[in-house]
Image (cartoon, rainbow, N blue to C red; front, side, top):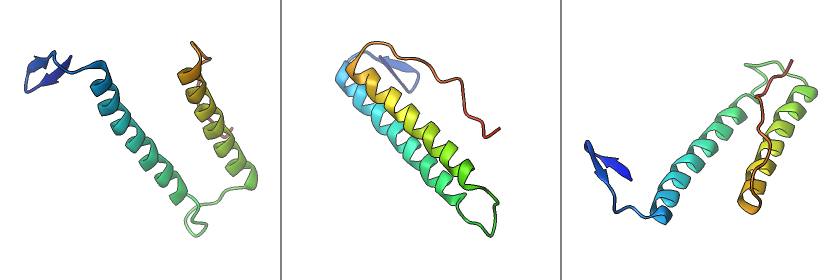
Amino acid sequence: MRYIGGSVDKSESRKDKFVRLAEKRTQRAIDAVRLLGNLSNRSNYEFSDSDVKKIFRALDDELKLAREKFHHKGGRKNNGFTLR
């Protein structure tokens, strides 16, 4: 089901729904990673190599979990990210 202009589109297939949501969510993730890359500007921000390693370890771990969900049932949830 998809809401269009206040009404429900019941004709949307599960595949169409997957494609629609996957495209939007993937683009948002790509945009977020690009914004994260903007933090590399040392004239605006101060960070350590340890900070950078923590960020990319967290991203790598989360990508691994998401990938596993496509191949297996379940998977653990991540409780968030912090540099501290």
